[in-house]
Length: 128
Image (cartoon, rainbow, N blue to C red; front, side):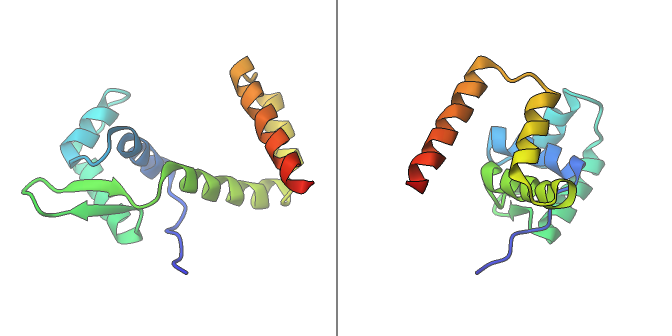
């Protein structure tokens, strides 16, 4: 069984979000996407991607002159990793406390509530 890479930092998570949205991208493409939200330097993004490669968060394709980066894990797996860590550290492993805090801290849209209900129904169906 292979071990998941470490939990990404907030800056690394921003880069991963760009890669999940765009697919494989060069340093310049990632930098431009981040720059649309707030000024971000090319060398900063390059250094972060180098660190992320060493940590196993992204893969680097070196076939072309401009290397392309892709996330090692899908978004869902990384989200599970982050939520699992938060669940253990902040909520003592209590899923209900985490969900109650999440739902009380920010209003969920009707569509989100419908998806939550479907998920709960699915979980209940598995238990029978």
